[in-house]
Image 1: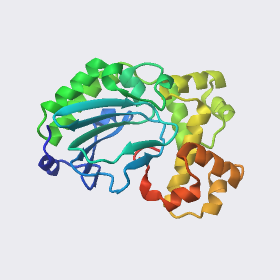
Image 2 (image 1 turned 180 degrees about the horizontal axis):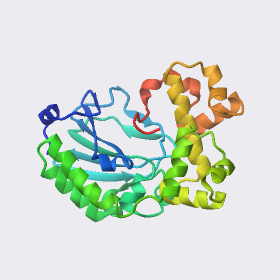
Image 3 (image 1 turned 60 degrees about the vertical axis):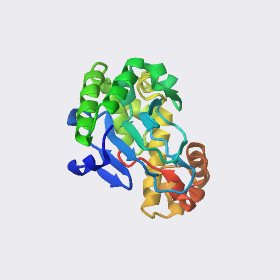
Image 4 (image 1 turned 120 degrees about the horizontal axis):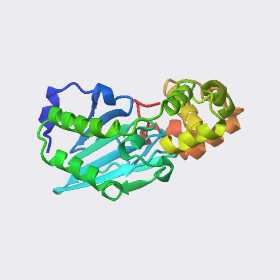
Length: 273
């Protein structure tokens, strides 16, 4: 198992208490945001028993090691808040995919995995075994990253995302979700029906849901930058404050005001939307 002292030898993207964000190979970065390793302590920096993860239309793999046992899970693309335990464990690995990355890894209709957490062994036994073996035979952080890179480079390029799906998703993300399905259809020269089919297959949700998540994540960025709550609805393209409050509550489980009052109980992935 990788040793904590070995992280001093590499250059993480970000370091938090007990938590290291590691860069994947450059060819993987359009599909994998980062690897995150948490060691020994409560890495989220909160005393709450659970932390609420803001949905980001992405999936991830989660491996924990405790009492000599390795447990692997696959989390489908998220469209609503996910509560995770902050109980400290000796070792935890996250493989954080960007939207669509999980499709290239597992190859299958991502709508079937949306908002689910399943044992990876049940979904892909060979991948589960390969990652478990990697964790058991790795002693340094650099070696861990190199082995994961080799494993994912081999798999991810067997089933690349189609250019049309990548282009449409990037347009929505860069526009903070402020494109209608009709407008996106015109820009991409595909029918609305075809775009929705692409999004459900590769991202696990329709275009409108993807756009809503983009808008809410944009709103949270503005909230974290101390923008006025009263102006957020207009800045993020909602019809009125009631519309913004309703969408925010449906996705995040609380009102915008409650979110601001309890920000330490929420985690927004910094390297996706």
